[in-house]
Length: 226
Image 1 (cartoon, rainbow, N blue to C red):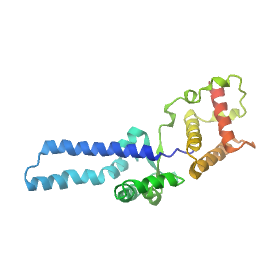
Image 2: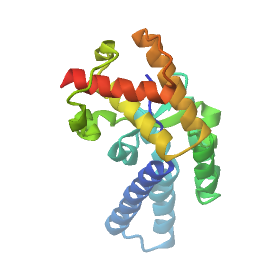
Image 3: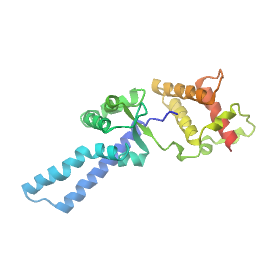
Image 4: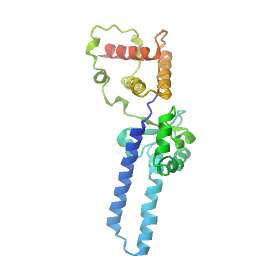
């Protein structure tokens, strides 16, 4: 089952949360250390300010399974697009090009690439073969999302849909929503690949188009599971 890639806005908010955390660290340390002389200020800069500023992101993601504090708050995570575990080298590659993607271009390059690439990757992600995904798809009940009062007389067409979990169906719903709200080739491809994957998993032989099939499976699942 496909994961849903994080949006530019979600990644931006995660970055902002991390920036606030690092800023608060600087403020607290400045109050504690209170450097007065030039030597003290030099030590404060080299030993206290620079390491978190430079290495916070790469160390947090490396030690915390692809999640900085900002990503944890937003329910995001760094993964490899080929499904393999993310290695330290991959985190380092993302971090190295973070300066170009975010800081040197004021976030413009990263935002454009995440919006334009099929896997929502900034330059560092492309080179590391990673992306950032959403991990909270199941946090809202599927029945609440779909508001299914109108399905009282509906007859399901694919009962094997119950082989899927509610979390998987929430991912399908998010893929559909993304394709409906943001018309890009990447979102359209994600919809088609999700439909093909479900045809294979559920052994479906139907002439329904990709969108119609996913909508039907969604209604079938909620009708049969309530």
